[in-house]
Structures are given as C-alpha cells and as structure tokens.
Length: 248
Image (tube, rainbow, N blue to C red):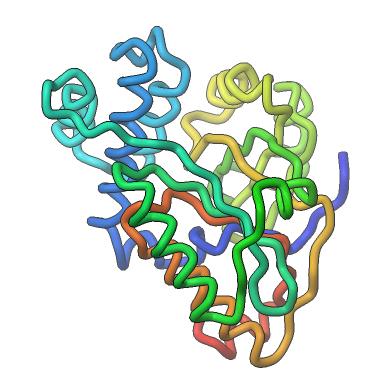
C-alpha cells in the first residue's frame, strides 16, 4: 500500500458538518432519493441506496427523514435530479472536481461557473481535470476505530488498496468495483463506517501556499454551500499552519 498524503476533502474539516447540519441533511436526503429512484427502494436490494442510508445514519439523520427521502422517489411530484460533474482549476493551479445533483442544470452551471470566476479559478472541459485523479471507493472511520497498524491489517484483510490515517480519522481506499465488498468486510470487523462512497483521489498533489490558500478555501466553501453541489474534490496540499492561519 502507498504511503500517506495530506489530501483530505475539505468538506470533512472538523466542525463543518455540525455548523451546517440542516444543509448536510438536505444533501444526504437528495442522494437517498436519487438512489431509490434509480434502483429498488429497498436498501437490501439496492447497493447505492444502502450506502446512502448508511451515510445518513452515520451523521445521525433521523429515521423519519430517511424514510421520507426514500418515499419521495416514488411520489408523483418527485423532482427529477440530474447528476453532473464539473471540472476546473482553482487558485494555485489546483484541479477541482465538483459533483452536482440538480433539478435545474442551467442554475447549477451558472452558480458553479460564477464561484470559480469569483475566486480566481476557471471551469474547464469535461476530462480536463479528472485525468489527474483515480475514481475509487472511499471508506472513512474515526480514529477511535483503532490504531494505524490495526486499521491497515483490517483493510488488507478486507481487500482494500490503501489506508491514510491522521489524528482524526482513517480513510480506506478500495477499487471502484470492490467498494461494496470491502465496506461490508470492514463493517463486519470494525462496525459501521463514518461514511462510505465513491471518491476522486488525486494521483499527485499541488502545494498551495500564502494568499492562494485563503482564496481556495473560499472557493471550496462556496461550492459546498451551494444547494446543488454534493461533493467537491481537489488535488491541493495545504500545510496545517496555513489551514490554521486562514481559519480552516
């Protein structure tokens, strides 16, 4: 397995989920609804829905909210959400991938483009950034799940490809097509994960320093605050000192 890197999806910065729980629940509900609409409404028969429900439960989303999101998929007035991926470059030349679930493509495109322009970035064509990333499965456990060695051993046994650990969490990476099997094996060994899903993992990192850090963080925060945006990924490498200096 490869060594650790400093890459981490900024949406998982400490305290962010607590500060915007309502918005987080909205995004989780949307994923549940889309998963239920594109497959069976039974999590046991629908892997994507099973993961969406597990992620919602990991964030303490109420059971009624989960059930309501599933039922919404079969309602006559259910919104038709479109999955769109935007790719662009942010401050410091970092590659940024934005995944969207929207019922209004024009609104989503305009908002994403505006945020990139406002914060010193620019949107690119599809494929202009994603070639710098690998599409992988990503399973996150809190640091309390075990030490680095124990987590590495469990990941190897489960068939994972890599583990990155820090003082807050363990991030297990698996092959795209093996995500469900690896997640199930880890759950049997360690209990429920903090989150499980597909991710864009950078093949290499781009260092970002100085004022560019503040601008990049504003771009990421703006994107994550948008109602249509589900996830934001980047190939940035920001030092802890710079993160602290800009209040991250």
